[in-house]
Length: 493
Length: 95
Image 1 (cartoon, each protein chain N blue to C red):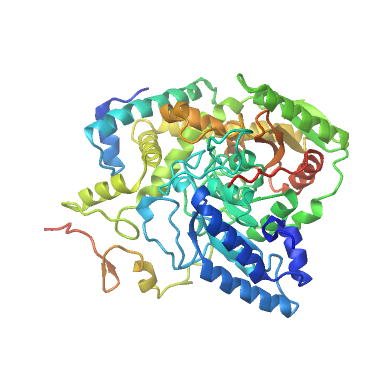
Image 2: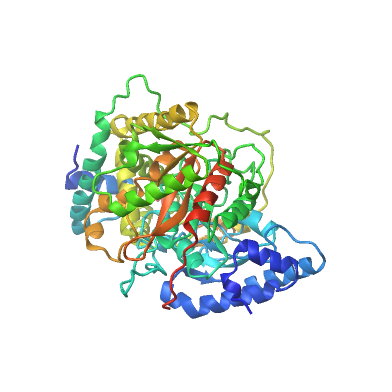
């Protein structure tokens, strides 16, 4: 008997359709794995045993009748940021204590309509603000990967740290995630998994707890490129409930896999070669270039001159939008309420107790840059720089570049409670230096595992594409995956 | 630009977050680190550049101004910490 939890979505789908396995068996295998390992990883903040079995039984009934959707019977983990009807939805924040929405997010509704099974809700940085999953009210998540010969616990990255850890440790077949500055791609790179942030407007934001509305996009984290293509097809849709949802049909992303990259023009941006970048990251990047070249792609050097300004511009735009979006947590409509002597005192005490340090820090920055006298100097300036960042990309795409290859992160996973990062918030922010440009320009980006560093930790490469050309990314990242092979952690838990 | 502790307290008040003297002191340092980091945006020449309003060029989607939803008062107050007769309850605001 093969280990059911080690099947990819594509493999499980085949076995389910052939009735070699049942959805209930598969779901029970995952629930068993979660019950045995979640105490170690803290990847799930809520496990929905009963609901999962109920959904799996319904899938089995549909499969028995020869029916069933694209994800029929596939057990998934859902980031705690997605509203799931009647189920724990707290964005891993204390301020949303006890919140059980009376509605379902569009992304999860799409997955259930295609037959997927929900295993539970996944841990994350509070309100998706963080790059290590350490800002969660529920505590940090452990990375299933450890350096060779070491028992030091590493972070899985963030903010989708629970999603990445659960996929990597075989605690779900695939997971939903969201990416505002790198929150899908950085944790995917830290855990040897695949993560894609689609073009802004491809997945509906309806029912997803808002962080920075002009940057937030949902996407999958999976064990290989094919699974990412399968899941994204289901998650993406045109949704009238989200005014920024783009009215374009969702292609069959899986069909792009295996297509040749011959003649594809891949840009290598010189600005991504940053000071102090480890040699191993540079070597990995060169390997990626060689693999694509061998497969027939044309490699060209390009320049994206405003790259270094993306992260500082992000740390104005994202907190500004967050300070506005998080104004709704006032102790009146949902979640935590701390009594006060009057209504203002109640607001202030509720928010002081309900939000963690990083969230407060960002609300404060956002409030400051939007306040009278500073709005033009900070916010308007940052939005102008954002226009220039986007133009950098438009210029290289106009020159015929089909996709851009970069490292996904400036390092491999670091330790939980890293002293340097705790002392300096900007150090933590630098984790997103290669991913944040993509959000600022609204482009699609995929992180694909490409190798291990000297300590045996996974490293990823990133491919950035033109708007709504996710298929190009699947095609090219599949070539990298075929050359690099797949990576899984050695089981120590 | 940098902030002093009084500015931090004023911003905390605007953001409706209660802060102790100690927290305000700590936040002053953190905010100044972040503001120091974003300072470099000032060196970018943005003359004639329009501020970004939408990453994807699209017209705002509009719909007919009609009732499409409703009758869900109980659902809307279901998660509230304090309610009565489908109203949210708040501390007294008018004497």
